[in-house]
Length: 334
Image (cartoon, rainbow, N blue to C red; front, side):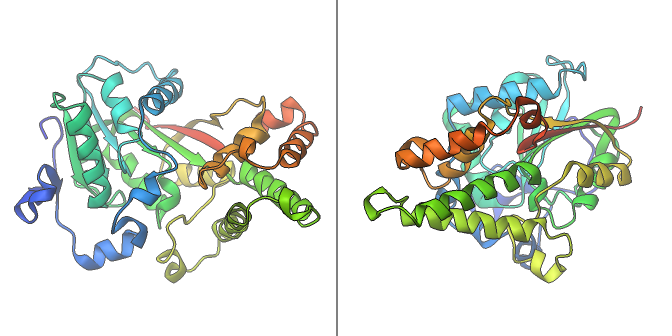
């Protein structure tokens, strides 16, 4: 790394395992990794990535999301900035950042070397000539950077994985330069609770349908898993022992994130939806169905009609106030 100062040295993990060449790390014990990395990311990550694979369309979508989030920040897209992406995974937000900021040093970070290997594979296949990307194994709650080193921090659906969200944002504040910006995309409880209610209505009606017209058992199981997971994540009283067993630990409310950001001395510029209110209920349902490689169009006709009927019960103004997928934009005082 050339543009940032470090408080701890880094080494190339390729000295320990040639497959990890090019991935830098301050060094973590097995106990540290076991506590912070869910079993899902310790082995083959293909099942995790399958519903939302990297694609040209996805990169363009994320470029739009990033530009929209930074529209009021007057960032210099051609500048030699230092940008830290936390919880980078396979690179969902990293490669859009590389295209938007061609002269910036992009630091892609994650604790899971398996996910970082996928990121490196995509980089080698599609961005082999890009020399400004640093791939770093990193615990976002305790980073390796000196104070006031980073211009922009980003995180795509990562905060809900953190055992201590407050500690993460305090660290973000520490490493940001004065006037720096942090942008996090997250899932929100209000939209997910609407999705849960729609799923409950679908399950109830499905039980009354003749067998040939029923939703597949696999999708119904997915509905029940979603509802159980939402119940766990919305419980604010979870013990540390339980948190350590969960991958998805939280589902946020706007108030909750505002409170945590304030405690970290970060100004909340905005928390807003990334979805259009038009067709929002269908959008949310299709997103959750995609996890089972399904969509409303693959369900029985009556299921789509029921979702459309429910959609009609919501005014456009109300849907504009529902947060399902949202973005939180933060700034550090100058």
